[in-house]
Image 1: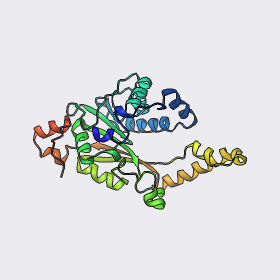
Image 2: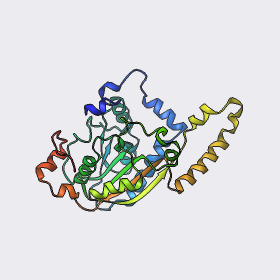
Image 3: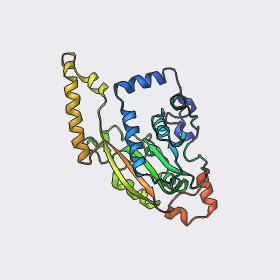
Length: 277
């Protein structure tokens, strides 16, 4: 977990001036992006879920807890992981859960014991995406859903801005996917992509900061125009973010050929576990 701590996560990152639950919720009132995203993703998961599933939900990198909260509303039994101390504190206040202070690599859970795993804005940070997706396959029951939200490397903004696009920011972001490359990774590890969503929006604060004072009355009109434009961008599959929903159809081709000892190493996040070729 020390790697993730070195890039602004973990116990050392809680500092004076860190966000509080009150400040987070004030921002959410102005721009309810996290609430909208959580409702969309959980509604989609419910639509895709198999009726007889276990209803056990793992939120990897739960952040402030918006997705865990929505999963609880939908009746899931939720386990939340978060290595950032301040985020864990806010998520606990928001959800009444106690997020586990561990990375996904080190997380311990029985094989086949989960029905949903959510990785929202987290897979781009992972040191080994093959290990993460293989481990997700092991932890999910047959037919379980892996939902992934991350920046779209095939977005219009990335095409226009190239390496100046804000999400191209190594070493914080190590992995870059478009829907096709992410599907290739998922299929390699025993998943079938059921649905892809493209999502773009511009926070209201961005307009307010850039508009000169005489133009402030135009803010509602500009917001409506930008929303219409972004809907067109999303319809062209060029949106800034992608939400990908994949179903476990069989054991990972990689993990199936390995010993149960190696599967246990993956489940326990052993540092000596061999890397997926």
